[in-house]
Amino acid sequence: MKNSNSIFKNTKNLVLLGVLAALGAILMFIEIPYPPVPFLKFYLSELVVLLTVEIFGLWPAILLAAIKSLVHVMIMGLTTPYGIGVITAFIASTTIACLYVLVKKYIDGASFMKKALRFFLVIAGFSAVLTICNYFFITPIYFGNFWFTQIREWTTLSSFIPGLSFDLGYGAAIAFVYIPFNALKGLLVLTVYEIIAPRLTSALKKIK
Image 1 (cartoon, one colour):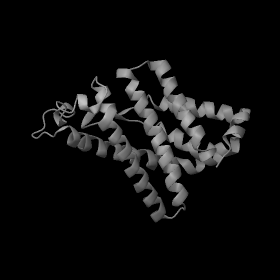
Image 2 (cartoon, rainbow, N blue to C red):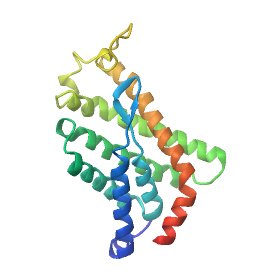
Image 3 (spheres, rainbow, N blue to C red):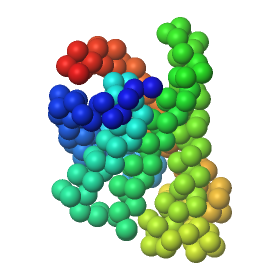
């Protein structure tokens, strides 16, 4: 494990962390709507968090996730009720960072099978955590309340995707919408990360 105290005492490291935080904040502005539910967005700011994990370790990456979210709020303000969009972005960043570190600790190696297994476990865990969070408080806050008990009686699948020939209750609707969305988001982030990480992390470690 990297020593966080020594990281923060090094000026060059602090500058590099600042640059990565700024890049993460910029990437939060690049949003790709999820076609079935357009108010859900894909974004790639978690890439910077994973790069920070690789270079500096987990705790600096979590700090960077908080900083990039704070910068986004300072620029854009609270664009969702109680800033739940930014809170969700922070939860997503820290979740994928923690899962990446945990899975890689026990399943390391560059073989295709090990990479595929790491992908599966991180994506499954990421999708599960974010779906559970959406069930209990993220979706209720987005719809103007605070807890799932306040909206589960009237929130159905048609609240997310109007015009379908069938409907589902609150819990089934959350699973129907968020499990595939979060799985695709995790797959997108990890795939892009695996493409860009080898050379980029090597270059950044040289700067560090």
